[in-house]
Image (cartoon, rainbow, N blue to C red):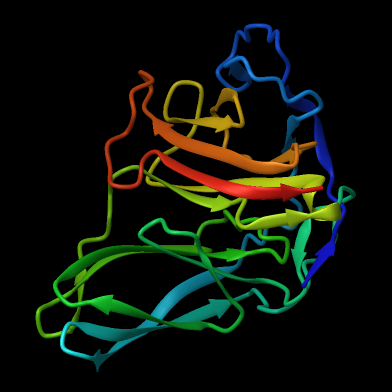
Length: 268
């Protein structure tokens, strides 16, 4: 079940899809059009209310259990401080968007696959023996926007060894980009403002440093500020989104999850 919320938009920033697009002088709003017209679709930066500066998330412990000859059941338990899971996020802004009726939660992203929403501080997954994995977790508002304050996320790398044991590997230091939203199907009012959000790790976005190249439908633009967006007026059907972390020279950062492409369903 989803509710509709209202969000405050930054009025100064908008990326509008059209057949003729003026060249921008800054990386933040640079966009290119590939030829297909989605008249009326726009992308607007979203102001983050309730930054939750004291929110903390950590992994308290991990346990494993045999599951057949080749797999194990791995349970992750989390410690959440200064943040209430299942609570509806307060100070909702003005524009409608998809919201979880179950409230605030944790985004559990294993190997950059579509996240699982955790409303309790625990999760169990099935993993193969002799496998390595990245796991990103971060606190999320009830409307699925990530909490970006220091301490509100945790990234680990680990392996399941040949005996089915959990083994921690060195904490990742390389710049990484993880996809979060949009995800799934958007119907009715939820399709009017579709949240675009990603999570940056070990990299600072700026005009002189790392940037994220974004492609929505047939328009590309580059952002140098870690900001969420609303995709507004998306046409009915499948909507493709692609995100890519690039360095200061515009070259793709090399890692297993970059770039990322997803498709969601829009049913206005």
